[in-house]
Amino acid sequence: MSRAARLLDLLQALRHHRRPVTAATLAAELAVSSRTVYRDIATLQAQGAQIEGEAGIGYVLRPGFLLPPLMFSDDELDAVLLGLRLVADRADAGLARAAEMSASKITAVLPEQRRDALETTVLMAGPAAATIDVIDTAPLRQAIRAECKVALTYTNAEGEMTRRLVWPLAVAMFNHVRVLVAWCALRGDFRSFRTDRMLAIAVTNERYPRRRAVLLREWRAQRDQAKGDNP
Image 1: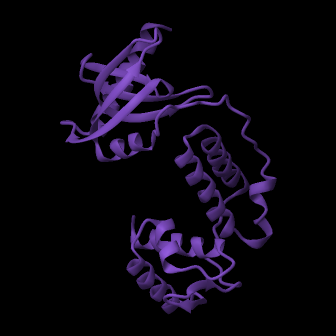
Image 2 (image 1 turned 120 degrees about the vertical axis):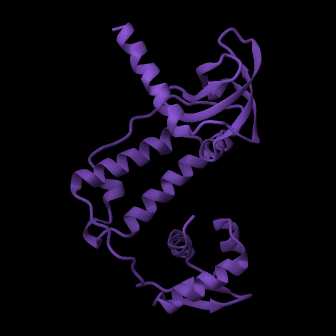
Image 3 (image 1 turned 135 degrees about the vertical axis):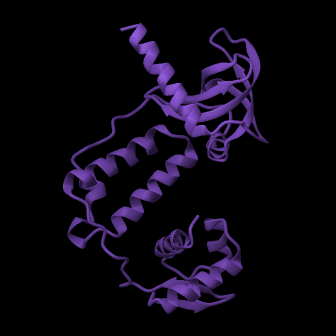
């Protein structure tokens, strides 16, 4: 995470607390050290943020401090908020929280006359069928970003359990299921794995030998060819 993004996250965390909050609490929320929080608060204060308090007691952001307004056209804002609502409704718990926080950050920096956009947007996300995962799928996203192989325990449509070593490439979200797209070492080809059929995952320290961007291009080419063969 860049320092600028971290400072914005700290401001957003302070905005959510109406009473003084300790550096330790902020550090836990932001997954950084208390020392980093102290340093970032000093930076924000130097830039004009009205943050009051002191170490050991707590900090509070005084009302009236505004981030620079964020400008979207009406259609752009509807598109962004609809996308975030779809993610919040269809993703795993960690990604859903991230979508909700993102929507909150966006509405917080909109011009005042458009501040109610989150509640009044003309587009709504319809309900999706509940996807019940046995495991926490957040490590899959981490493995994808790091381009690390994953050991996967999986059950197929017949209920048979299998163990695979895969190179995770992307997670596709549908109305009823979430699917991991990956290169399967056992099959020597691209395969898709439903997250609700995963019994266990273990992210390894071993990076796959080819870049994810290259593999994704090959997967898309294979997918498009298959569509052409089966119109």
